[in-house]
Structures are given as C-alpha cells and as structure tokens.
Image (cartoon, rainbow, N blue to C red; front, side):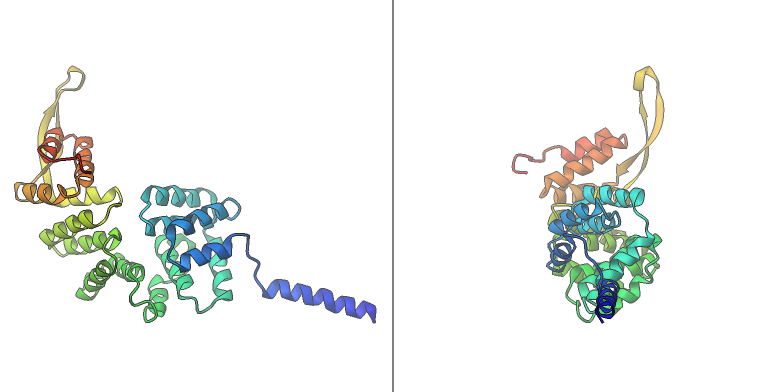
Amino acid sequence: MYKKFGLLLVTGVLLFTFVCPAFAAGEEEFWQAWQNGDYSAAGVLAKGLGATIPEYYALAAICYQNAGKYDLFSVYKNKFHQLADPVNLKGLLDNRLNTTPDDSQAILMEGITALLFPQAQLGDPGVMFGEIAPKLQDNPYLLNYLSFNDLKNHNYSPAVQKRFQQAIALKKDYPEPYLNLATLLAQTKAVEKAVAVLLDCFNNCPLVPAAAYEDLLGLISSPENTTIKPYGQTLNISVPAIKEVYRQQVKASLSRTPEHLLSLAEVLIMKGNVAAARNLLDGVDFKGS
C-alpha cells in the first residue's frame, strides 16, 4: 500500500510539472510591467532574463522601442540575433499564453514579436492584432502595430491612415505612428503632407529614431553636385541639398526643438553638405534647449 501511495505521489508530481509551466525568477514581474505599460522597467527585466533565456532579448528590444530608447532597441535586437534561437520564442510566449489565455497584453506582445521577428514563425500578426482589437481599441501601440502590419503588406488605404492618426491622437509623444504615417503618405505621393507629419513628430516627440532624420531629408532634399578637396585632391561628389520650397518651413518648425534641428544638421554634415547644415543652424538660439 505504501508503495502504491508513493507511486501515486510521484505520478502526481510529474503531472503537475508537465501541466503547470515553470517560470524563471523575474518573469512574472516582467509581464506585470508590460501589462502596466511600464516599458522601460519591462525592458530592464527582460534584458536580465535574457542572460539565461536569450530569447527574452527580443522582448527587451520591443519594450525599449515602445519606450523610445532606440539605441537599446538596436542593442538587444542584435543580442537576440546573435545569441538566441528564434524557434524558442514560440515556446516562451506559449508558456505565458497557456497560463493566461485571455491576456490581451500577452497577445499584443505575441503579435509585435511575430511582426518584428518573422524568423520566429509565430504566425500572422494581423490575426493576433485582430483578436484583441475590440478590447484594446484605444491602445496607441496596438493601433500603430496593426497599421504597420498593413503598411508592410502594401495596404495604403484611408482606413490604415486613420488608425495611425488615432494612435497619434492618443499618444502625441509616441513617434512610431508619425513615422509610419509619413511613409504611407510618401508612398501615395502626398509628400507635402508627409513632411508636415514628420515635422509634427519632431515637435511632439523628444525621442525619435535616427532614421527619422534620414526620412525627412529624403523627402525635402534633392542631389546636388559639389567639389571637395581632401588631402590636396579634387573630388566631385553628390550631396543632399534641401529644396528651396522646404528650407524655411523646416527651419522655422524645428527651431522650436533645436535639438532635432541640430541632429538634422549633423546628418547633412555626415553626407557632405556642410553649407546646408550651416544655413539650417544660422540664427537659431540653442541656449534654451
């Protein structure tokens, strides 16, 4: 009888082990921070978990992107690619979803991961976003990623544009929907509107990805030939020159956020047009920035 009891006890423990997923220390805290929208804290927790579960580096990257910490987004995205097995991302997320199947925030994370890390083969992010859209209809992150998925699939419809605009209205300091909306407008040849959206982004968002300056410059400039003389040699090169129609508009708008104007000037310098950078900065007051 004691042997039978012992066997039943061992069997019960094994069943409990397989039915109830094990969570590493800090995982519950991570998901709670994500649930609360505290993306900086969630990023810190995810990068800590990544030391032993490298697939968490992908989740850390997503958190840092939502928090506007784009340098850290790149760092942990690269760490994921270098150290993790993308296939294991599915097991990591399934572990959470099996425990909390109706957790809209966990499904949101699954959808974003499927969108930004397609090599994990998690499935169609559009289906995941669609499942939670009725519950998170006022969530700017869902609206942005749902629309970005449509944008990636070459859907430039007014409905997609409207969702980006809704995301902006809900969170004015969130740069991603501005940048994605500008891309959509540029694809539909509405360049002036795209420029206006990017300028609004710079004026409302203290933190933007470096690519935002490249995007703006791509819309407002055209190539111009110039001559440089490095080390006594004469070279003819092509540099971006801001079109006259946009020069005063950009300078007047970004003078309200001089740090962004300075970053745009730095991009011009790196691309070889020092004169254009100097013209942008001339007369701008940087003392209050």
